[in-house]
Amino acid sequence: MIVQALQTGVAVDIDGTIASTVNALTEILQSQGVGPQHFRPNTDPECPSVFIARNPHLQTTLDQMVRTIFQREEVYQAATPIPGALEGVVALQQANFFRGYVTRRPSHLQKVTLDWLQSHGFPAGDVLHVKDPSKSTLMNQLNARCIIEDSFHEVWSLFTDHHGLLIDTDYNRLPLPNNVTRCNWQAIARAVG
Ligand SMILES: [Mg+2]
Image 1 (cartoon, protein in one colour):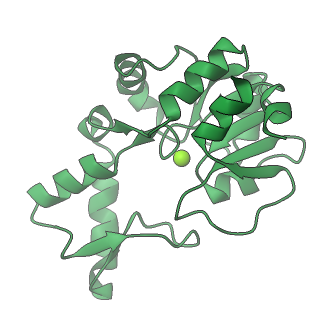
Image 2 (cartoon, rainbow, N blue to C red):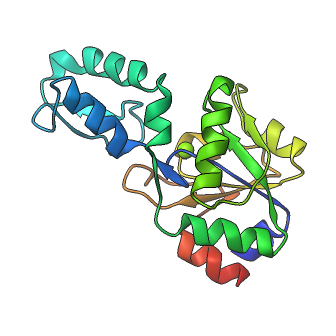
């Protein structure tokens, strides 16, 4: 199932799929006096917040701080690769299935994104910045009918003739549509290896 989807050409999401900004975000929050005593990770796929404030009255303030920090390039420079992602994307490129990256990062972050991909050894490729409700339109531009994603909402909004491979995380465990398969990077590397 996984290999059939990958053979149709694959686009790769960046945040939460190959790059984690959580540590960088946490460090910047701590430098502003906000630490783990104030929040915990969000594992509810229905809630868009990255962190949940321990005091519910402070949720709006915390969300605003996180949004402001996500405008800063340093949080993307300091992102760490998701375990297994590098080996997985390299294997996809060697198998000739890899078509490029599709991200919701705003386009002014393209240079920092390309620099990060290169410095961590990820295969070079187009980085397309999505604004549409569905990533499927840009997948078509890349000639990819499959996407590797961590977001439950992104795989739900794919066109039905596209396939999603959802990297299993503790924040995306909800029932999936028929065109989506839950998996992990190790399974992807095995499927093409
Ligand atoms: Mg993502």
